[in-house]
Length: 202
Ligand SMILES: Nc1nc2c(ncn2[C@@H]2O[C@H](COP(=O)(O)OP(=O)(O)O)[C@@H](O)[C@H]2O)c(=O)[nH]1
Ligand SMILES: [Mg+2]
Image (cartoon, rainbow, N blue to C red; front, side):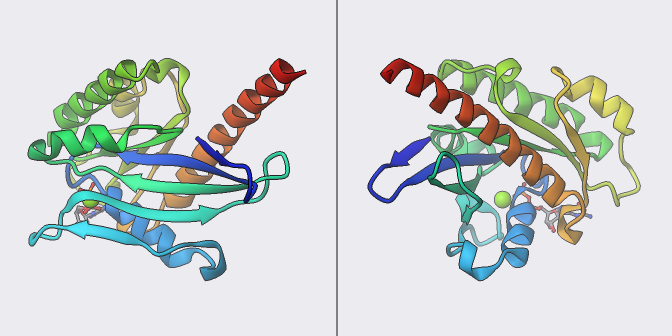
């Protein structure tokens, strides 16, 4: 979170995290295509020749008000490939909320879990944990034939019972439900933090 007092803006960072090719970029692209131009910034995508995210995808959204300040949500994805390990870590600096995009294909279950455990490690290094942090799960690629059941994915990945959404990101299904829920959770957290700050100043 970053508060720009002069502009009365609160900048909040939401990161789409998950295994390579799980559908993170498709989420951001769909959100970008549906948001009122007045409320969004440019979409920035840094891609390799193979059309894969090499640094991050970025999109800024304005949503409502918090304590008379304008919240701006900065949406980022991480690159999934192993050789962008460092970048993936850097993008998590200052994160306020996470949408974990899991790939529902059965053969991706190990990659999903490894990536989730990697995320937990990264959060711990920043003094946070999945148990006490705003995040949601998205079970993506529900249109494919070789997918794991939602029940099994819940057991494997939803370690702390966070809200989980089925999705087909390239068709836009399940994209806004996950986004709205993470925004709600982040805003609730910020309210609590700002409230604490006010009590401390009093
Ligand atoms: N069938 C299907 N393909 C998807 C879905 N979501 C993403 N894809 C495709 O999977 C590939 C990787 O998606 P991308 O968003 O680039 O993954 P990222 O590496 O997590 O950013 C692309 O070809 C997408 O069009 C989905 O829900 N269903
Ligand atoms: Mg990507």
